[in-house]
Image 1 (cartoon, rainbow, N blue to C red):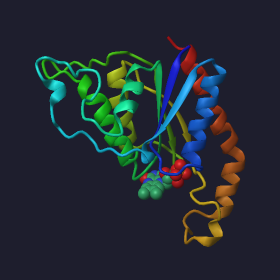
Image 2: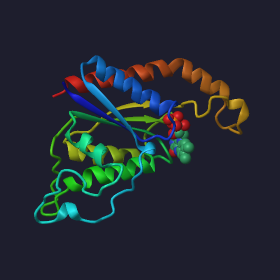
Image 3: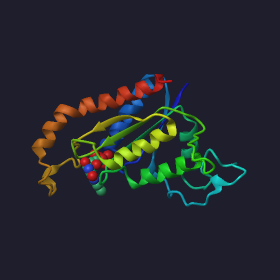
Length: 210
Ligand SMILES: Cc1cc2nc3c(=O)[nH]c(=O)nc-3n(C[C@H](O)[C@H](O)[C@H](O)COP(=O)(O)O)c2cc1C
């Protein structure tokens, strides 16, 4: 049975990113995969500490970052899985800081300082899931995240995006005049279910790819 890992880089358990990640998980399970989700905000870790153990000549640590903290198991699972999805709300045109720190730790051991080749132990399909207020994901920060992920795995990640999400459940309580409740409601009625379905379909596709 294939194993698919979801890295949820968003802080909120029951909001948009978690829902899109769960839809992706449902699709992957429907496709016959085992799915495990890791919520980065529940884990105690930091980004790469530049210890450079992964660049020692013996290359004992070339697959998984050797720094021991809450991420150790997650890194191992994501490295040897049959597919990985990276889910994040968009913060200032980028993925969250937690996600950036995670990806540093995941990928730096795979970058050879002998010849700059990118050498993941497994070339697996990858996907990104974004949720955001805007109605376009044309952001340099997101593109560079996708290029980084795609550079390591050999092809660009598949993508599913939920635009113009509900940032809060009750817009009447918040000063958010730039995001009128009526527009949010109208957008959600038209798009939310199909956004979830797109994530679900992407989950199903990941299981059958390669
Ligand atoms: C700190 C912060 C920065 C944000 N920056 C952006 C942004 O640059 N572009 C955007 O479209 N939405 C931005 N948003 C909105 C979130 O991306 C959006 O509400 C997202 O769906 C939240 O995901 P969640 O419901 O899973 O927490 C930002 C939200 C926060 C809290």
